[in-house]
Image (cartoon, rainbow, N blue to C red; front, side, top):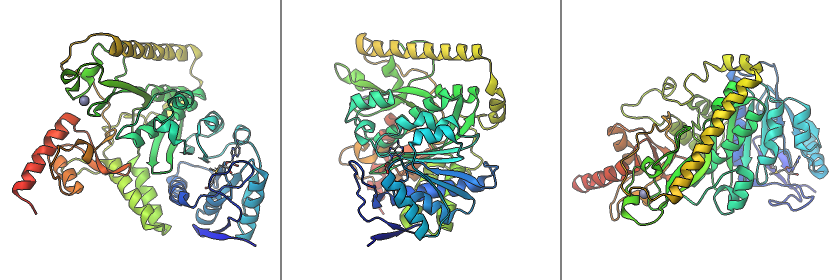
Length: 474
Ligand SMILES: C[S@@+](CC[C@H](N)C(=O)[O-])C[C@H]1O[C@@H](n2cnc3c(N)ncnc32)[C@H](O)[C@@H]1O
Ligand SMILES: [Zn+2]
């Protein structure tokens, strides 16, 4: 007797599977279909991107369970040559049965994923982790080729959302608390670990897409080979100062010098209005772009071509809009590349890759300056805790990363002035754009706006919009 479901054109026997396996059970979670849809779109976008020069794209569904993800790739993506792995014999047996009943040619292996990743190269690797992805990241970068894609799904909410700070520190080498921008913070925490793992193999990354919904966080990254790409990326792992009163936040700058007045990185004046410590340092996390607008647009196009659900298409539409995060009048995202921190990164990819054999002492130097900058961050942390600094510091003129898609977002309920009716969120986005700010919705939070407007100015503008709305309601 079988119990079948159909997903992405493949029938899967899920008999006896469970959502949260303890020992030798095969896992299946129907709620993760949205994630599997996103991954199939990423694979389709990659195979058509021209970045993989092989006729067949070597794809690994590394933690396969029933094989539901990898079998869909074999069905839907013609260029995919698929290996599905699960170290659990009951799972790999089920994958074989599901492949046979769907008449799909895939290779099934029963390996520890880290062993497999050390043995063979794959162009596209999906690590769908039950919990944290951290144990597999080093192996994932061992053999992945130039421009290869790694997709990592994490479900360790307690560590990623600041409910188990010891685990966060142990697994991600950082600190987070509950914030109103928690989902993106968690994605950036995962990305910092991904970057560190890549750097150990002299590789860097370009982040193509991030998705964080209720039950998972998925990051899609493209590998850029060479120590110089690795160096660039590790420098983009920075701490954040987070105001516990109003939730304003800012990245620490990349500097080897101590920050004298860290509170002045924030736009708010909470420090001058309240006694005691009002901020904490979060991270370190990835501080650069988390979307590639062209890749996200390609994912959306493939979602449409593959006739995926309205939910997937609407999710990807929101991601495309936040990846471009336009100002007013709208500029074309496909050519709006000049603002990214990775400026010149793509152009320098080839150079970076040629530098792969860069001399060891050069490494030594750059790591030294990096460690100096971490040392300085350590000192500034100290100063935040210990010194009795001036309580109304002037805003420090420190360059914040200038991103195509600004980091983080403001939740309207959290930040709108009490009693003010703001009307529709899309209208607020439009008003921010008219005020010459970048602004967009964000899939991380349906009630929030991604913008490069400072929190200080954002709340002022919200009050003005709200007043104007009262005068001219519609
Ligand atoms: C979250 S489930 C995968 C779910 C699947 N991708 C899906 O979409 O339904 C994780 C799977 O990884 C397998 N697994 C756990 N650790 C592993 C390891 N070190 N090597 C290989 N497989 C492993 C488990 O047996 C489990 O089936
Ligand atoms: Zn504040």
